[in-house]
Image 1 (cartoon, rainbow over the protein chains, first blue to last red):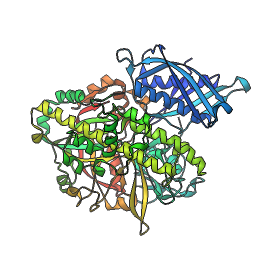
Image 2: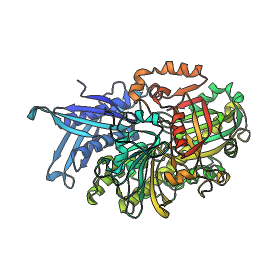
Image 3: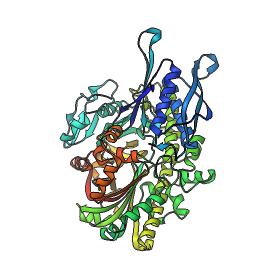
Image 4: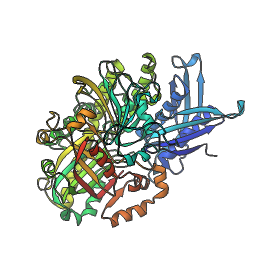
Length: 148
Length: 485
């Protein structure tokens, strides 16, 4: 299972991603974002470290996706695999949540990667992040709309 | 992904529908949607009217929360949204401008008639495609140093003209003369500068375009005459914005304003409406950064115009003087501006947000270029790549009714994914060619997503705008050459 799917939105593009853990759902949302941007296999040969902090999970998610977009727009990077940790507590002060990730991918190669569209940003409109299903077995579900 | 909107739309005059203030808790004013009755069914199809009601909750809003006839579902504000707030006690919202700050349109008029260009249209379109960098992640022919980028942000189109990428008279015919006052490069983040340094002079992708068009019909010959337009004449229309730099400015200040919303205890129905008091440090910094990004966009469209002139000259073998290619006008349709308007007989200073809406000033307004002042400001309304685009003129009614605002385009009728499911890029290209339109796109997916069938008929939009008295039709332009990102 890909862990994400696209949703219709008149002017923009919606994405639904899920995961057994919050980290998996965040990673699947990022995979979905890069599936919107380009087609063709992205080899996980380079590693970039990403850190974002926020006051709540929704904000953390939008910042995470927008940070990846920034890396894409300035360094032409495409990512296909993510290893990330989300934590809270005193270590994260002053923000209450922090995300540390290693994003694996490569620079876009016009010969191998079809560029599909320019994504301007992940938005807060209609953003949803919740847990579905019974108790500890519930899956995390994310809905986010991108401005394209 | 969202159902029909079932709220109230009460008739409120010709082409005008009201969402009463009582519809939703927190609304500080009515919502108003300008549209013809037959458009309402489409408008109710998604949640755009709810977004109008949401905008009506912004602190300090003056007059109704409005939407133009090309209203469609956006994020935060609807596309086509107009909202004015009192600069004394109101807010400014980056979501009321959008990510593509000063996305806008310009039209250049040539001294050529259709027959002179038809024979070479394919060569011309391909040359334009080579000369004007377009497409996803396109970087430009210009890479500007950090110092020079600061000047771009402060000086806008004037920077490009002084660098030889344009004519001094171009500035006479652009909104704000191609540079907004109050831009402070220091309020633009390093990230935004990094995104901007190699994207100046690029068209971008999505709905951005460059079209060679022919004036197909003139509705108002005296006004068209003043705009330098006549039937059969070839014109060029450019639609582009502030590229990654503008996107990052919006992203950055949304994060800032999520904090200010908490600090000032502002309750909002949608986080994407995050805002700050106009006079607060966050509000002032955003407006200064937004103006800088707007200036980047004006410099961008100015650079693109220069390469259009060179491409025409090369392919048609004519000197620029013979070609004309003078700027008719350049409008911003994603912007917030501090403007003075009369409200209830009193002059007020307002922060007017136009998100997918064009400023439309009537006759005599001092901000209209001298050559057009007697009739009003040109309002440029692009349609889809298969049918037509329009040039309208602003009215005194719009100044009284919508703080001088009108529609900005056709508005999407179909999502991008629905359009790509229904349209094959190759078929569309052939179909367009049969209709006399040569289309080239950097990406096949863009072509399919931007198919004419994905858009409403812009004629319905401008007719509704005219019914409501917000602008009047002057000329209709049909495409013969299209470049898509």
